[in-house]
Length: 133
Ligand code: T46
Image (tube, rainbow, N blue to C red):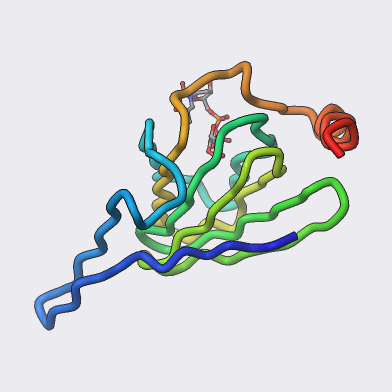
């Protein structure tokens, strides 16, 4: 599985930095932005795949691990920098865990929220991707 980390352009300054995301920074048009915050210690998020949705995850603050599965392989990516975005394509299973205290996960999404786009059972996901191949 190819892990795609996107460099988010930044404007650095001794008074603090600015990260800037514009149309050409990411490979899709953003239709929704949401963020995970106040995640309790030990909590796990995700545990699903999307049929169509693509997303970029950014650790705006703190850190967390993203476990990615494509039905064959598993990869773990630690996000801990606000200038790196992890691209998660459609049809990829994801789990988020090991959130640090105060971690904030910003998500840029290619689609509006649609529960019909979720595959929330790993068994169903395995069947779905094997039919896609
Ligand atoms: C993902 C990871 C990183 C909405 O109504 N609108 C929204 O835009 C979102 C994201 C969620 N919801 C509702 C759906 C559920 O009733 O909020 C509830 C919790 O959602 P979920 O269990 O999907 O949350 P996470 O943190 O496990 O997953 C979310 C995204 O849903 C998912 O696409 O990749 O963050």
